[in-house]
Image (cartoon, rainbow, N blue to C red; front, side, top):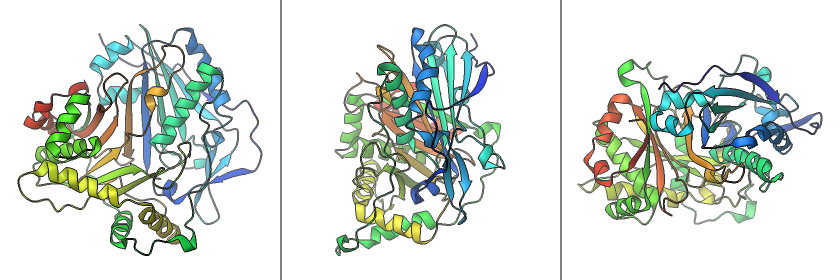
Length: 436
């Protein structure tokens, strides 16, 4: 059977049920602006929806009352900085149909097929007429629904994008928003609260990562090295085994170290550069409902020698994360502000691995009704110029164990084959959910 998505049944605009106050603008933070050239795409899969499917049209309009930024349009300020004009331009919603069932789709899905479930349009020459958010609702003819959300990373990181879907689900299920978003600036540094013993070496290293020169656009990919994405499920037992091999108490360090070393082997390089993206809401003392960008990316210092690459790699990642403290991040924010920084290339490049820690997102709580909870969720956090080499570490579905993790890896096709033949990956025996 061919699992295909039909052309969209309809494309419409949804606005909130309350009128947006005229003349309202939302400035963007420096952590927003540096992500301008990137986007976020998420696909939620639901095995059944029943009559609740019809509620989506009503509940999304109610949800937008708290998310006027999603309905707004981008404008440049007199200082050439992006800001959002909050208005009733609305959210673009696409409705489509797909053959088969959700289970059949997930059994045969790959990157190219999955991206057909999440509509996206590049920015027009006139940004004011362009919708920075799209939602695609795809109904499977033999049962199930997928919900795809795409947006510019300029306006939301993966946590904020997930927060919106969760709020929409709560509104559909209960008629109220359990966790509304909070819109406020990043915290300022109080002049007399600077730590004199703060290690500026690490904040300088972080700042340098953001001010490195923009890389050239990578060459166009041929059919032999087209990007592929594989999704692997590591159970609680598998993650514990990996942590033991990596000699680390943290699941993220172990898995990131594992794939850093194994992807480098697949690429036939010693050890490629690694950039790690972290959600710093907690580090900055922000509440979980903070809406906007709070992902910070930093390069791992590679001083790895000897034979025990895995444990050294995990330790290097762990040390970098420990040094990402509030003082260092505030140094970065202040430097970005002082230098009027806009777009950065922290997600670009073909010769480095970008690993994004999404353990803190909570996609499986997006329940649209009784027994209408996600059976699978996929994330893509990528630059506009091409996916490059990506590693995303996500939560796994409930019931797979406290330490279980889902890992999404994007590589050229020939390197994906080598990675899946790796002896250490085989030893852990993760479950292949997509791509091979």
